[in-house]
Amino acid sequence: MQFDIAEILRRSLENMGYVGEKLNFDAHSTIEIALENTPSLFISVIDERYWLWSRLTWLSSDTLATWGGELWCELLDAMPHVVTGQPVLGLGEEGYELKALIDENCFQQEGGLEALLESFFLLCTRLQERFSRLG
Image (cartoon, rainbow, N blue to C red):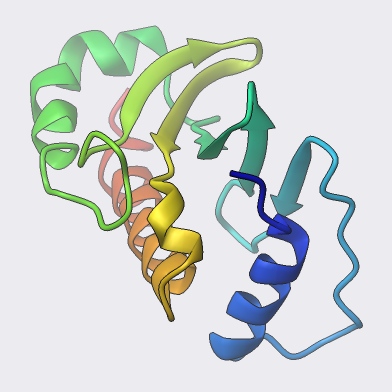
């Protein structure tokens, strides 16, 4: 099913209290949500599936080798509106990424995208605060 992700995201950010310049998005493939002091969040459409993801620019292979067990434990908590329940950690083109395959019901439920964005952002923030200085 196709959704107007740009419009849904616009409404979600407004509902979350984002006030600023007019929100204009180009939803052809990826939408970036730039954040202060935290890597950006992205929503991408890949093969008609919707992904929420972020680059973990602070994560190195040394950090992963040393703290992988603890990092894995942080990823076990269920996250709303994620197909598998949990996000996945993987190696992308520019380093490690945290990705969540979005359950499309998220776009049909009032507050669904807001809940997902908030929980994903909090997880990214928690991971960065806990592991970015440990290398």
